[in-house]
Image (tube, rainbow, N blue to C red; front, side, top):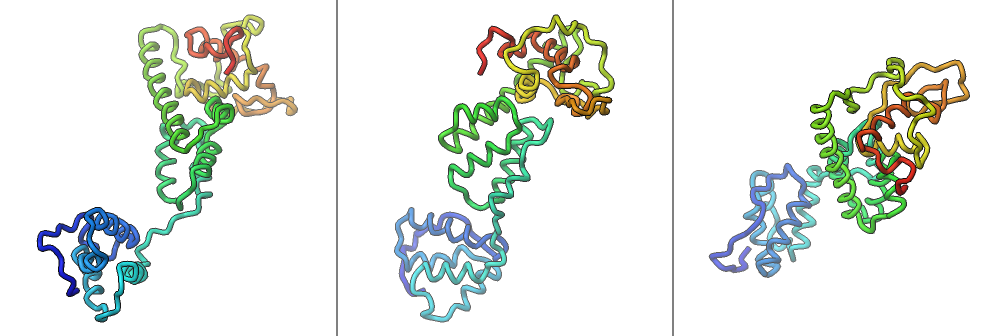
Length: 282
């Protein structure tokens, strides 16, 4: 404490630490700021007192004379004293709970994901990218990560964000077009449940040929925020068949006329140009 220092020394950064927040964050921030202005280790120890308040300042005053040899020792004692205020990070596997839910938009998923990432322990780039990938629902974006793996987490997060922004913009554009058309919206919330569909307007044999299965086309439409699955329907008599759209037994997804009609409607307004035969398959 007898170490002299310049009278015009301005201690930057966070001040008034009173023992109620993470001590490690306070130490790291203070250390980095003091390193930037180029003071000695002894001055750094003395100036540390000016960043404290309340019980933290009282603790500093109780340190025995000669007990602190350098800033590393002071920092260690400080963090041990206020260890109960340290933020305990969860293991990265906690991110399993932040997976994208069925029908959840990418925008809503990203809000949840960013909050969860802030609660977990630090991860390396590859782990963070992997956890983000497996948290996405099956669909075009998930498949795109496999076909074109991102090289960094920053790139992976940016791609998901771009898809989310594009989906939101697409939804706004679609609502504008629907507002000027007599066609009933094909919006996510407007879908009726599986047992309340109108008679298909296109005969099964007249549906546009697709360059992928109906299931894959449905997943692609979901990834683009174009459709939302209806409530699960009631099982039909044939339990050997299952429909991924109605989420019930009774008929196959590929034979589901309601799904084919929905895809046909989206194709007719140019929303699924990539999935009709003759288009390039991603």
